[in-house]
Image (cartoon, rainbow, N blue to C red):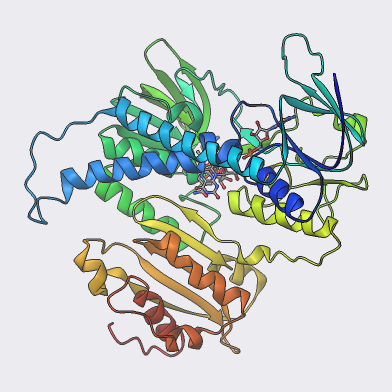
Length: 473
Ligand code: FAD
Ligand code: NAI
């Protein structure tokens, strides 16, 4: 059994953990990282952000080839889906990306321990490499710990994810025989992204959602628009105000039961049922009690403003603590904690962390939503610009969607930017910069935007917000 002493040990190698480890090493800490899976990168790189985007990109090309090429004057025939190849390409992308993290660990002289990390006490962690025996393959001691153990799919009462017919996003990303029908529980981020992948490939997708809209946490106008476009372009059916009450799997399919808006029982049948009803923090067998670390009422690790737990020297970041479950949020927190440990004065502006849904058109938002401004009684004004009035969007046949800018009614400070449209994921960075620098809507109306670009629509929306002086509407 190896004995090792570190300045910092990071448990979990997702975008929170591996980024924290690199920043710790850069700051001169002797650092180790423990990961229970053979490949590094966590949910995001292995079964989340990266593979889902690979499948979204491939399915987007497939859909365009069927539905847009002809109008563009490209005659192709015999387009066929090779789903095993699509899934293989996705796996290659994942392997390259996780391999890149392994390289970065070596480059930064971070010791990697493969196995399940568990606290023995607040300064000692054992690594359980052999699941069967439960014996530690290494016992590590440390001054400080960063817990970055992430999250796992959560289900709802009477719906058990059997990983065969009733599946989470992890299994959905591995399907190599295209289902004719797919039921999706939840019109949140995973529901819309994975629903898009299958609908674009030809599956009949039905989304069953408890609330009255898609992507509930985002500005309401975005949810309305993406629902409309997914119905129109992909034929996705949405069943809002339907509370799922159960799911039963057979060898060939799944029956989902729900109560509709009137409280009447209804039934849905599909080859698979994708459960996309949120994720829960993962702290199984972590030995938090041995270290004396407290959880909050929702099963997350409780942290203070420095992201430190109630035990001095033990920090937690990413999906396992409060806040948005986003890769870049986890990474920002990783850097924050490393710099705090080094005595620096880092800062995270949570209001300026963008959220993106990689449907097509993409959906992106940052800052206050209109619903939040109303609820908080903040006086605001709003400007918007539709992509159908953008020359660039017409050129690429991407005319659905709009940019919406929210600014303070009196000061003109930009409070929120919400985009549904082509490349919204990249364009939202203008909004992030605006919020970080506390820019005004007027600033964005003045900035020169290259022509023709999708981002000109941001300038036009800003002009609209500052006095209805949009040029092209
Ligand atoms: P994770 O990435 O969950 O990493 C935690 C790691 O800790 C895991 O590797 C786990 O094995 C390991 N671990 C846990 N316990 C132990 C232990 N005791 N010992 C050792 N190792 C342990 N976010 C975005 O921002 N953009 C996206 O496009 C996006 N797409 C997504 C798509 C899908 C399908 C899913 C499921 C999620 C997506 N997310 C996306 C969310 C994103 O993946 C998470 O927010 C992010 O991975 C959280 O990072 P983390 O480091 O906190 O935890
Ligand atoms: P989510 O929280 O986005 O959506 C869950 C949806 O399920 C909600 O709309 C909710 O109302 C609905 N729901 C809950 N119970 C229900 C019931 N009984 N019947 C019907 N509907 C019900 O969660 P999701 O989509 O599972 O994603 C999990 C996390 O992963 C999110 O927090 C997200 O941040 C992250 N993620 C981020 C991505 C991105 O940044 N592009 C992509 C995928 C996931």
